[in-house]
Amino acid sequence: MSAPRWLEEGRAWIERELAAALPGEQEPPARLHAAMRYALLGGGKRLRPALVRLTCLELGGSEAAARAPAVALELVHTYSLVHDDLPAMDDDALRRGRPTVHVAFDEATAILVGDALLTLAFEVLATDEHGREHGREHARVLAAAAGSRGMVGGQVLDLTLAPEDGARTPERLEDMHARKTAALFGAAAEMGAIAAGREAGTRARAAEYGRALGGLFQAVDDLLDVTGDAATLGKTPGKDAALARPTLVHALGLEGARRRAGELAASARSRAQTLGFGPGAALAELVELVHSRRA
Amino acid sequence: MSAPRWLEEGRAWIERELAAALPGEQEPPARLHAAMRYALLGGGKRLRPALVRLTCLELGGSEAAARAPAVALELVHTYSLVHDDLPAMDDDALRRGRPTVHVAFDEATAILVGDALLTLAFEVLATDEHGREHGREHARVLAAAAGSRGMVGGQVLDLTLAPEDGARTPERLEDMHARKTAALFGAAAEMGAIAAGREAGTRARAAEYGRALGGLFQAVDDLLDVTGDAATLGKTPGKDAALARPTLVHALGLEGARRRAGELAASARSRAQTLGFGPGAALAELVELVHSRRA
Image 1 (spheres, one colour):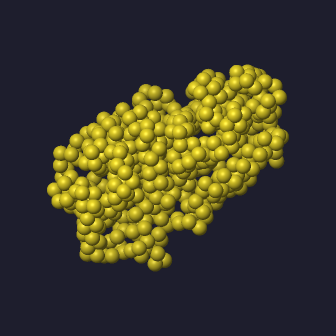
Image 2 (cartoon, chains in turn brown, purple):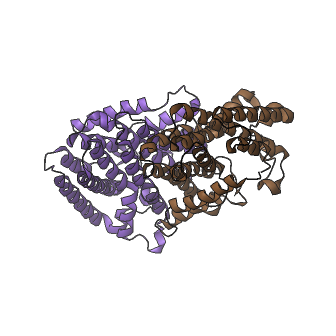
Image 3 (cartoon, helix red, strand yellow):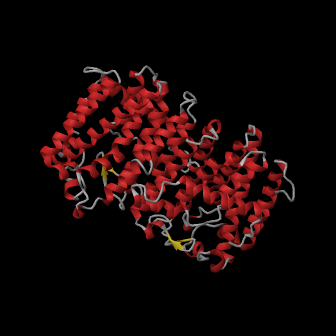
């Protein structure tokens, strides 16, 4: 994904803020804190926190107001990757070209790193001096998106949609994706609108835009697993297919999945417009970036 | 532990509130929600939420104000048990006489159940209509006690205090216990004081009382592992000893550990008095109950 200036700015900004939000590597228990830094500071697109910041700025808010929700969201996203990579889950040894946490440290530490990152997310929101009045709303939105009805529920569905029982209808896959990926993108945009101090109607439209963008992101992910190449992706393409994991390409075929991605992009575009952002605006441009990404 | 009326009342109250706070067993994803109910509604002493309620009531607050922090605290305690029981951690097959979550369901589900319970804890605090003004403080106190500097950090220390390297000094064990057990008891009493609307000084004294009580609880736990019997405990005594897990009895010997428990009880008693509760008051009586418990 070629990133314009505002996306690169968001990435540099969140890297600094994440490093500042974590306990120091020497603070006891040092092994745990080192593992938390390892998990969190290993790179990544930082698309979700950049979306919090961008939505907040585009809706008239400040960068300072976006800090706590953006940090909290990336902490939640990162904890979910650490737990998803565990042997009992996806059993991945590599993430962004580096050994996963349970490989670099051990399995118990990886479980506890995830727990600690998730807890820290809510501590960051509860101690945000900039957003005292918004902290409660941020926590409500983030917990709902990340919990059993959202991201965690989506992961359960991902693990339990067996290939052989005809359960992988396009509808069930989209429900799984809505929970596992789109809910957190929706929370990102909604928290941006909250941080900007916007009213309930704008918050709801921002959430819908984020969810549409997240659905598109996941559809493109499924396509890249089939069409991407390892060097660009930084991971092995075909892994989902080899593991017979449920993807849109399974359910709809390659052409069907491409068509569906196009529909999701159109939907995200139109939702950007309901927020007042037409072609050329950053939130609309982001749709095209996510649609055309190659990694 | 023979429980007086106020402890039994607290237990009955929190059972109802926990059941109400959980998503319904039929709500999708049904398997996850069934496993969450299995983990949470399998009994237990409910000492921590009862402590939130009791502290709140004794300091002049209402039962309604204690609900959200008590529920959140028991959700956090329960998630920590589910994760601690995992094969990569303590590898326990039984908890309160029933198969642990990863045995009754599977390991991936147990990891996700813990994640979902932890997330729900902060959702409960963020959506507490009774305590809008206190929700932020509750979340701050709970996250600090449960995170990498508190409970999760204590679990890391528990797993890494190797028996052979002379690392198990009484000081390190007490640091581990302070994080792993006492921090959450401290949060329970502090949240009770917050729910009662008390000022910072009383909150701090309540937190110190709770931490002393938690230290005593853990010391008695270590003693019961050596002196308890299986029928009363509901678990196998001697397990910590057999696994060469770090306990106070290892560090101080049986008599030394008994003496230390006596000191911790005296400390908790004196802290109850700094809150204004002398012998005969419920918060003082609780110290004697925890000190003399047999299960």
